Length: 315
Image (cartoon, rainbow, N blue to C red; front, side, top):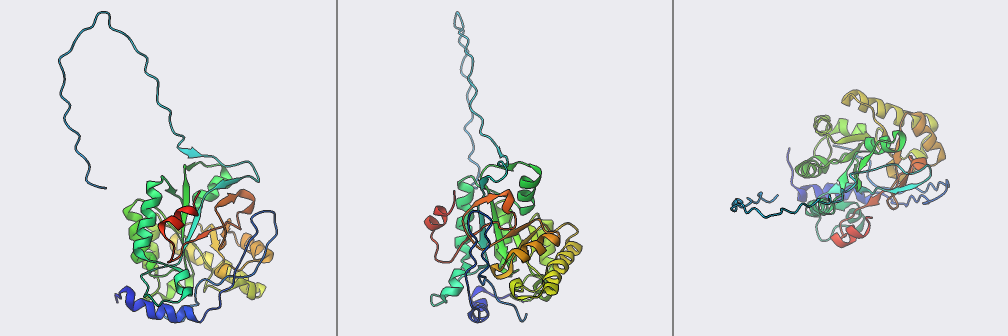
């Protein structure tokens, strides 16, 4: 059943209103890990311009000059099309943007909902800005290869991430990205996709997005706060969800988004043991480094952000 954005606002608000949001902050340097979780999303209980024609060039009569001077053309400088990994421990500016809901909100929407939502027209304007500024979207598979295997990336790389398998990923993000030949990374809890419905992606949508070049990655089974689970459950959430995604998609799953931004040293160790090669958190900045692949910072985009606000967060 198709529903419009205004019909989705009420159930979204009801789902999100019951959440308690806390902040997960990871220090920007060193190896200290702070594990205060930040809540992001509810546990679901449901359900070019036209090309300009160049004028025809008219050939002028040839004049022979005696003697004919000869000039050696100076080649124009060639822009470097790729960046290479930094030295071990060094950082590189690769913003990872974080989106959740992509829908229009009523004027009286809660601050919580506004924090985790971006309007579709805002999102489209942000994508246009990124293209105008020469940013190139990449996947987390490319980022892992960059750090682990020395594979080059295009200049001005940027990662666009979308958490929680909301239907907005398919109805808004996916078509807007394809329109611009851009890619996104979608973190999907497998139980959410299994449920599908009016608010969530289903497997057919996820498979279509994957086949179109989008990067589908892990977000546990049911968006569980791993810091509050016992070891057996943590391992089940990490291992089983990864296995389900790999069986459905037919290729490896490399990255995890920690639900609610909740992590600590034990969760990171279990994430590595489960076979993931990267993990993203909820904050802060855009400096990435190879020895912190399981603490990749992200930049949250919110409803109240102007395009100027958006631009200031980028390198």
